Image (cartoon, rainbow, N blue to C red; front, side, top):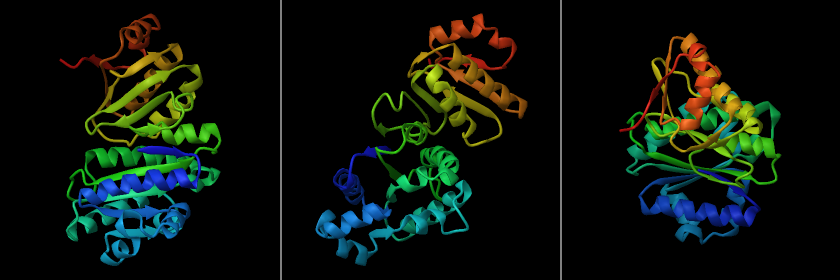
Length: 273
């Protein structure tokens, strides 16, 4: 989940509700970021008692640097290893999984880390949908919090690669995420969003074999969007992969034919029975 918050009070109220759900499920809680930590210090009775949860090992609080940039710099591989270890440890300690509340506003606003953060958010979605940790079970969930006064293009980039988004609709007109077996493209993609979609598709975790993209919830895609999808498909096939476009809207299929994209990008169209 991506949550765009207005102020610290909004972050704290929403974050505590999210974490309370984890407690009810028997999960270990991990809170990351200075604003999250400050909210807990200002509300020691939150979640039934912060100090007792920390003492029991049920709640861990870390700075952004400790969780995201401590191990030799911020990277997708480093974050995957960090959360693998944290999830496995939670399961080994008897919890049902790991629930993470992370305010990563400062990473998003830093041009040095922005592109890698988008790649990580995309990879993290695929990672959690497919089963986090060595167990391969769906045992990690996360709320990624971003302050709403981030520059609109920055917020849109990170929000668009989450399955669940709380942000203004005009900032995030589409979402690209994993449902565990396929990528899903939902919402609306026009010429204004096409460049962002190009970057999002380029950050999709690479793998050998079939790349399946479900378009059932794609409400609108113009000519530019069709060309973006075709360019992505061509790049995948040139790397030895295959592309399946599932449940493509009739308008996109028609546009695809009129533009002659079948001759330029090899894809197979399929529909859910």
